[in-house]
Image 1 (cartoon, rainbow, N blue to C red):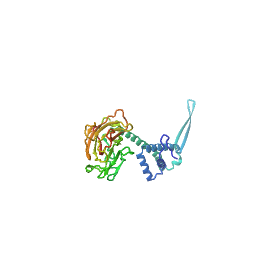
Image 2 (image 1 turned 90 degrees about the vertical axis):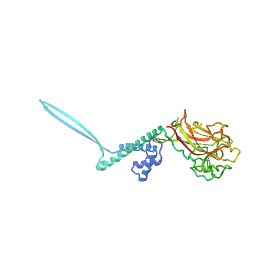
Image 3 (image 1 turned 180 degrees about the vertical axis):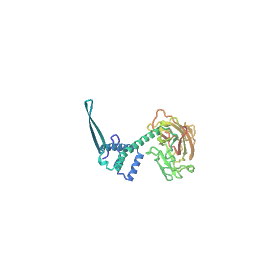
Image 4 (image 1 turned 120 degrees about the vertical axis):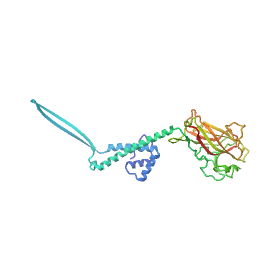
Length: 359
């Protein structure tokens, strides 16, 4: 019969069975390795196992057969002195508690049994210590300031192998609106995409055959992607909170490519590209932002105007100064096309990297 501590959430049947087998000394080698894996990877499993061992030890001590001996001594002392007789009666009791006779017939066997009785308690204390140590490590990791930003997942958009000319609207490792075609991974190659040769000249300059495509349609719906940030600290990797990077400066580097689209009258329009650090929940406010006009300076304001020609690649670098204010929560890196861009524009992004440039 399994005992699940009332203060714990119900555990998996596999964990309960493995702990039961351990307590009954019925674990084989494969089951022992499985239990070790569960305890190593799951803090809740460690807490459950430690509590079961503690309860088992307490119940075992209550149910252990005992032998109780009561020894009574009576002494009567008669003394005569100076014609006076003195009688003194004394009574003393000694009580001893020991294992029953069935357990003390073989001293060596009894010592072994006593060790097995203590083993669950020892392991329980070890597991409890492990859990406390892990909890303290997690707390320290959350408080430790990051000195590096961990590399973005799928930063060059090569996680999936696309055929020449293929377009895929899902972007591995990045959040986006997958129901629309405004954010996509493309393999332009030498094939026609959206009715035109996209990169007849730039294709040879790409470090990888695939890139992220962001577009804005005639209704102002614009493509975007974002990714949760992680930081490297002195004691390991941690999920970055906005507060962790408050006041810090993040340098962003990437390739921007303007495709040579020939499909519509809107295809030649410039776009406003932005990148920033964003809060997780809506409305998705930004604690840092940088905006690039892919066209020439003059018709609208941006932090930088590139004046990109069709089928041109440029490597850009810019800094994001983080100012969190009252915002809290996880930090996200976001890229997209601003909705005040003219309709029909498109931009390709490749080889994105982030790094902290201050301590």
